[in-house]
Length: 450
Ligand code: ADP
Ligand code: ASP
Ligand code: MG
Image (cartoon, rainbow, N blue to C red):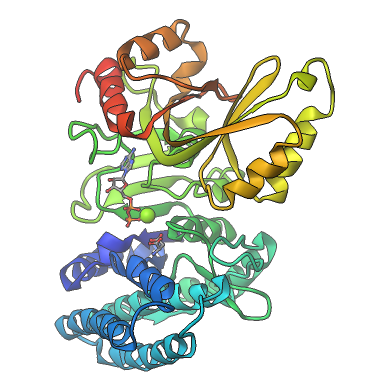
């Protein structure tokens, strides 16, 4: 059994879905379980609808919903066997209109937003399942929500792994074993009482690996619009090269620090069983892609100590200067309690004798955070920053790397430097506007091109 996940660009239109169906056909003997994302940009459009339901006029909202339905209809018309799917989508869109109308003059709750955004995957999976059947594949549409049971943190819910494992084995395994092809949704789930949730942006990758682990899959294939994990985002470094292989840890570090190709939690479910992830290009299915797996099985590539460079924008640096930190214990605990209370995830941290700097990504509610931190010392924040990360298992044994890095990014100002505890990454903070240029300079230094 294998899991095949198709991202938004792999199901963007009828042509892309037709290619996806042929890829699924080529995997039939391996018993694929298919996970799909929403059509490209549909989640963005649904999120916009949810955000603007309070201020936009009824006509405007209606027109946006209509445009979304039309886009799905066009796909359905171009693919044999999809007319039933469009009936289901149209009925659901009517419900969406009612929900939006019922929420005029007020902001939607995160729970209501999840009901709205989860439609992207529900609709795309209807089209892909019907398209497969129309192409004579024995596919069956499966609603993932009763399987992907999560907590109630709407818009960034965490799945309950044991429940997911059991339900996936009970409900998906028998279908795949019987030679049927389950086609289901990434990104979405539901609480134990059946209320819709989502796993955070880009979460379909995570769905795929959770199911892969639950089903003891031979591999999890992530089909996307590039050839694999690359030495940098090709949108920033056009000459970026594809990596034949990477370790789980490298992939996780890169994803955490901005490489959008994978959701940060993607590798997590597969580590214990050592199940590989293979990233593949749905426009060029014949290419090898990148295999991500246990470090011991990774072949080293070339002599660069670095495997890849990523960057993440919209970072805020929080600095705290507290003379009472000197020689005192309990200070860091008190500090982190404040971040925990405000539900702020800290990415990078550097500390001196009496001061500490941390980075956070989500700066909502920052005034309240600063107020509470103010009880511990002087606090100042710096906004519009970016984190740049260089990642590679070769970093462990490479002396003099920091000097090479900082010489090459000069004259950009490097603000916080941190070498990860795992010693496979080095991160630093720069001004946001310098980010792309810094990535290109590092690529030139370590891979000889930019
Ligand atoms: P999908 O819709 O298939 O999930 P995404 O847009 O989420 O695709 O991820 C693919 C994109 O990730 C690529 O188009 C590329 O621009 C971006 N990307 C960022 N960093 C990297 C990297 N290191 N290697 C490859 N792609 C990257
Ligand atoms: N459709 C969702 C998003 O755009 C999930 C995904 O594509 O992985 O974030
Ligand atoms: Mg993605």
